[in-house]
Length: 559
Ligand code: N01
Image (cartoon, rainbow, N blue to C red; front, side, top):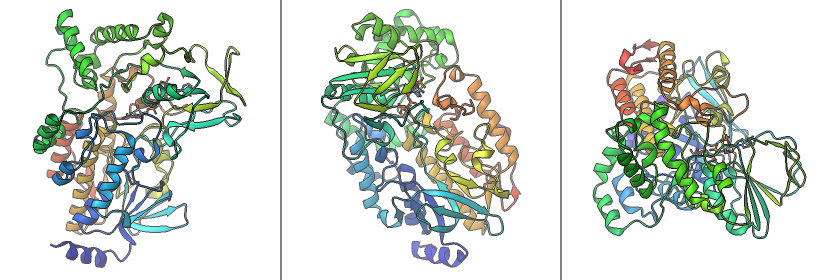
């Protein structure tokens, strides 16, 4: 069937809807979803995007130093060989403005903008049981009826400013790394306070320090931070990668985390001190996530194994930081390595050797109040500041979905259904919310992977689902309650077998006061999860019900 024929069918078969699909968000996920549904399948799709341009995460996170921690050659779409070949990244890790330029290029290349409505927030979506459609309402007063609702809202897009006493009273400049001014910020000659020491702060602090006359970093938890080793990529390496598009694509799709990284065959407890140090040093020198996602798998399960790796990392911090007291504060304590997102370092530790940069421990002495002039700690110490930068992260994974009033069967609110933690099947759909698909939703590998790889897999699976529904003439798809319950249990059991629950992280929802403490990503790993999903589809959508007809899932799905 040609695209035109499909379009005609779609139009004639969809008189009860304004469009076949509404997609929320125009980042990597939304753009590829739109391209797939409209350009490849001939459906009528419409994207709503709250920003005034495309990019999602990369539209909002414009703080100094913002760049991806994934190598640039795999931080993009692989669905189109020509697109992959024609785009040139300037460095090992792509900078924010370059990623945004890339996504703008994708938008233009596939003529996507005409179906994207910018500067528009989706406020609510309600499932209509009588027609198996969704009614979507926006903050511009528009209402759109659609068969399929697809959230492409990102896992880290609902920014979090902690509810400090007096947070609105500060008279100076206030910024959040997650929604940085487009025109940039000049910190020259200013006394700046950065609250937080996660991946965003680790990237921003060295650059803010170059401008500020005085910089104070308020740290609650020290992080395990390993070198990025950024820089230009040798032309012959770039060329070899271009020639190996198919190989790279296949390897990252089958990999554990969407990178070209494999775990060591032996565990950290099975090698001599000498071998361990040699291997860790090799990965340290290479930079990137090798030491985390390509190291010793037993360190995720055994504290003893983990301690051997930690010791190496603690030494490295002490070597880099001149003042032993500051170094001790920067050495992570009380939780294992690898279970909190590992930021990549481009001069973060060395920044604390500068005389105008200070580190303050707000675990021992918490922030009591934001005042008109700065920050006051519990013991009464005051910091007078001209600017405060909140590098305080996000209400991760569930936050972006909870902000929308998504009502399924019986008007049940998704955020209420998820009151004790997310409940999904495959991180893709939730029972009683038919025809609602979530790209890289909670309980899928998502944030524990190189995101574009997981995004492509989900987009293609959703497209397949929609294609199958249309072929069958079916109007409704949803997971069964049994499959969802078993998936939730499987995810919790997998996490509980590891050291992940041992740290207070956004993976666990622990950064948001009152959020249930539940491990949110899925731990099946990218390749095995992908294979599992493929088998589920091949077996006629195991664990799903199509127009009420359920196909039970095999036990292996939950292993
Ligand atoms: O946010 P975070 P982020 N009082 O949640 C602290 C991705 N990302 O924006 O650790 C005092 O990591 C909080 O302290 P603690 C990446 O996946 C990717 O840096 O909770 N401090 C922490 O230090 C990353 O993991 C890239 O004890 C408070 C900080 O604020 C995710 O986004 C770049 C506090 C928040 O750190 C989030 O990173 C950047 C309070 N009340 C981000 N509340 C790349 O790929 C919070 N904090 C490059």
